[in-house]
Length: 133
Image (cartoon, rainbow, N blue to C red; front, top):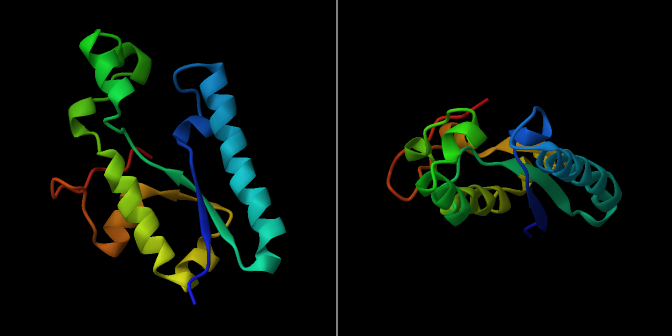
């Protein structure tokens, strides 16, 4: 059967300064949560991943761009190159469908754009957004 998967949305902000201190600390905690839950939940055959989307065209990011705040807050990333929120959903669906892949990656960071390149899926507009690693 299919193993349960808990996906925690995190970001590269857990590894290096992004936006502000609270954002980075929160993302670092999300990474650790995925890692530690993997250890404790493995005996129940439950997998966990910290999912790293790239630049996501969220409502909040789009509003920041409209207010002229995006460039400074993001360090100059071009939001037009961003991915839809559904791109991460596609990653979770494919991971959930492959129990061996989930088990192998449980407790680790999964970069959505890199998984898409590896498995051959695209965003809703047919693009393969680049990894910002």
